[in-house]
Every structure is written in structure tokens, then in C-alpha cells.
Image 1 (cartoon, rainbow, N blue to C red):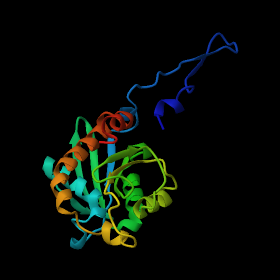
Image 2: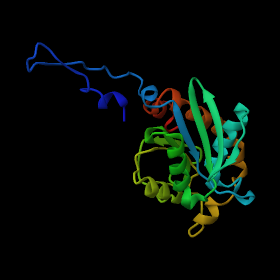
Image 3: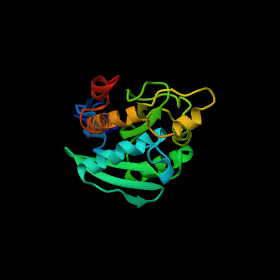
Length: 224
């Protein structure tokens, strides 16, 4: 919540021993991001283990790994995951890869939100999405889990769906009954060729979320 709201009517002054009360109203700050917090938790969803590194389901890990390599920062093993800190234009981005496995991702998200005192509006969860074509980007401020087990657990632990999620399309080019094999399968040759450009854009999306705000980021990148 924006801090000025709770203080809006907190300052009063009684004049000349009458019942007249003068209210000193504070103006809201224009930049909601700065008024709330300059710290952001960027959560890439995935599964730990070498067998999952290049799978479609691990696109969340892949995106934050790409940004870390690009900016020359390293992940450190921490409680419930691996964490890297990236600073850009006065903002601090905490890149988190939960080590709880996908189905228990919410535990890591909740822990680091609380530990770093990060508000819900500064949470950005990156995940794969079967319902949109490969590489297509969809950023939303809230929503259902869409059948994704990582989002399902985050919703459960946080007791809300009102956090920003960045869905990266992996398409649904699999035969009936082969969904699990497809999601946990590796990228095909065409996808591998296209991934570098998509990862570059994804890293710009993360920075835009923290500096330009959610609405501007959705306008600029959704559908690309």
C-alpha cells in the first residue's frame, strides 16, 4: 500500500480553542514504484538438477540466468534457493531460483518476500505457458494458475493471485497424453535458434518492470 494514504489525515491542528480543525493534506507521490519500494523480487520458476536445465519447464531459471550472465553477477546458494543481486537505475533486483522444486515454489517466494521486506506489487514471477505460442510474451498483474503447478503453490502460500506474472509461451505442440514429456523435454532446434533473442527481450522486461512500471511494461512488451 502507498504510505501517504495512512498519513492523509494524521496531522491536525485546533485553532483559537474552537471546534474548527485544519487538515494538512499530504500530496501523493507521483512515482508509485519509488514511493513503495526500490527493491524487487524476480522469481524464475524451474526445477533443480542437471536433467532439467534445458527443458521448456525451466524457462524461468533460464531467463534469470541469462540476465545474471549478461550483467556479470553470480548466484549464491541461500535458504530455499539461489539468489543474485542486480542494481540498475537506483533499483535493486533480487533474482531468485527456488530450489524447492516447482510444486513448492511458494515457500521460497514467501520467505524472501518477508526477509527482504518486499511488497506484493514488487513481485515478478517468470513461468512457462502451454497456452501461447513459443516465445510469445504475456505479462499480467494477476490471474489464475492456469494449471501451472508452480503458480498454484504460490497462490496457495501467498493466499492471493494478485502478483505480477510473466508468462513465456512454449506452445502446445505435443501429441495427446504427451504433455508431461513435452514440458519436461528439451527445446527443439528451431527453438534453440530463436531463444537468444527472446532471452534478451526477457531481460529488458525485467528491468522495465522495476524502472518503467507494470502498465508501461505491459504496453511495450505484451504480445511480442
